[in-house]
Image (tube, rainbow over all chains, first blue to last red; front, side, top):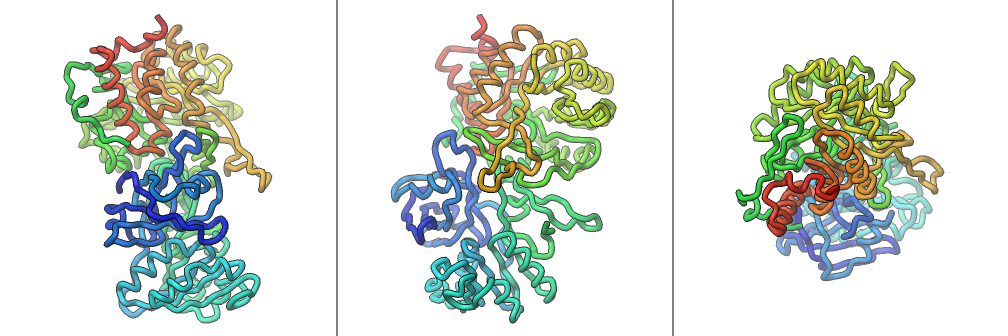
Length: 258
Length: 315
């Protein structure tokens, strides 16, 4: 858990509105686990004020580099996208819980919706380093938004694609595609509606899974109680858990969906 | 963000000690309730022992689940929040959270919130018996459930009544946290002082709201929330200035303090201590940066005792 000014090594526009920034942050790169995030100060003035939580997308420990894959959704991410090589951004992190790496024979299955591939790509990097091949279900509205397919295949994983418009792969949602042959230890990230459906499929098929959640965040360290989600409270309905420190990765069965 | 300066921290020729209604603080920098959790959240980032005091997140008699999400909305140079006083209740606080601060050398001030006047009395009595509590801060920006949901803090008489019952139930220093959402904050401060308050915290958040124009709905799950951050600082400084002139109680000033310069504005207006709030979200070391900056300012300007600065802009 560090606070550091990190230099931008590279900033790529992957698709209009979608960016991948690579930062020089040696200690954070060493410490980072798949599923964790960095709390990024996108500007340097009082407006916008808060940091932005961005999933760690890829790590190169030898070079001490961390990449973040993000979409412009507001002023903070727009400011970040405007930053160029050589500029610095202040980072807090790595923060949050990571994914639990699979043990034994259970095959790893990744289910990503759109930008949801962001934290899962780092997981795929780590699985590849452990010589574990995963089945990767990628979903998007259209083929262009199926991100990093070549890189994922180069890591030795197998991709199954689904698009809403049928431009590539299965014509439908990624969860529908996964449901045709549900098996393995599931790692999911994507829009809330998709994760809700995915958690139902995981439950119905008695699988184990972990989901990475997103919520508006304040402090990032568990103090302000802004970024909560409803989770199962043993014996007593639901309670609010903090996405920043109790998550952002939760066991699929723990999240209570509205 | 710069590392804390060890040179100024060790500078013994500067006297930073302040006394807030009987609570001795080694320096004037504390934390605003609700922005610093129960302290341990920030222990990885700062040495908690360097804080003048810690004001923990608001505690109620019974556990509270809090409000639905979204609980946070960013606004120009500010933040709207509607957490809804999520907390585990006073018993769990005393048994599980309070002991975590026992190893630190800093006064722990417990913020309390009630739904009825009697709630405040019970909370004060319960905390009076708890070890390691230096004082209570009374959050009067809560709705009075039994009397038409009107906020305790919005009516001078009701604010005085709450203060009185807390005083009657504890021997520890009582700090009352004033709301800016009133016609005359001086009138509230005077009633609270007359009812026996030992100190004032000012200010709580400003009531506000934000609307998502794409969804055509309020951003916050609770519709309205409390505004904090740099956007509220001029309002906060003004209230400290006004109350300092009329009420002879020590004031903990807060509202948008990001830097030592911000903190000094409050002190010069009349605050004896300052609390750092929303800045913790942006910079987990904000309290230390503020403290170091105050020391630096005093060194540079030949100020030996922080008390020389309190209210100095009024002269």
